[in-house]
Image (cartoon, rainbow, N blue to C red; front, top):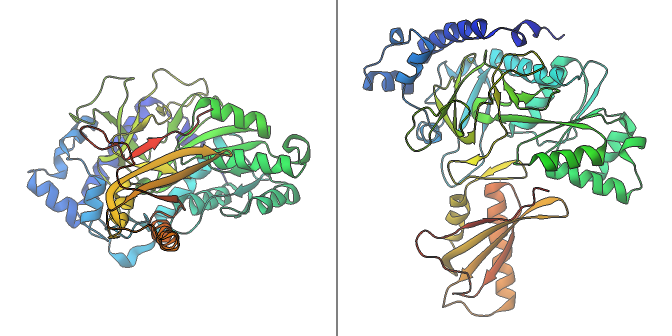
Length: 432
């Protein structure tokens, strides 16, 4: 049953009053974390120093590196026996990031996702199909439990197998679909090949998109192709996953649930707050988490808070769509990838030099990765050996980043050279 209207419609004073109460409780709870207890002591801070929302700035930032350095459970604020699930980032070249959840955390996460889906008109009686990966990736279970909490019939189709996805859509009367933008375009292409008109032959009306960068033009094109309204979603595993921020039916920014999070936008270089409406790095503080609350977490996502009120009547702040990253992370097919993950694997092969180039392109409406890597001088032109080497490199990179790249072995000196910092990534993806 949906019971969250009073939280969505709070006034700004009510939101800020609740935020301060939850912030003070969260900071006190964080003293159960070895990491935060030590950090507060090092900075001569006490929970009693947090008397206003502005006092949040007294607290040092938390970073992804902090999560890696305290791997696996060093930031936890409850004993491990009180936790019921963890989610983890991919990666074998270094410590992944791990987020723990208690049963209450999972319930609150489901409520947040349900609130997002309800906001765009979904109700019990809708059929919600999830084409996201499950397992450690939060998009699968996050939307699954949120849709169930709202009371919809759910179809946990998981990722891939496009013809099966389409069969489920037509046979089960799917009305709402969660898919990354590039895959939504691919679904339409296969529907065309199968002679299926999504407007006439399906009951699709709502599409939830996110997890990879996309333009407003791409969103409108997807809406036109599938005959749906497509709503942008923002989430990240460190903040639970999906359900952090979501568009309403006005489609003019993502409402971030401020009873769950405090929003800061800072200059990524100076770490000082930017002027209202300016683009900067999004910093989030969790307010309703038991197992692993995070204080002033640097997301590395670049965005801004949109000025003014939303016509929908909600007073929770609205985030603009993400403008990019303040680090070098790549988002491909909904997966977060750092070039250093690929580089670490390439450098393990003595046949390769240190020069490589990652190219991202849009092919057949799908994002595609090609890795050109130079051979060293000692390598011979043995075709069979080259094929075998490329196959093994591809396998190891797929195991690391969960995406299959095209690996091309090129002769030494053939990649373009640049003065200063080497160009490792070329993003040529279309944004329609």
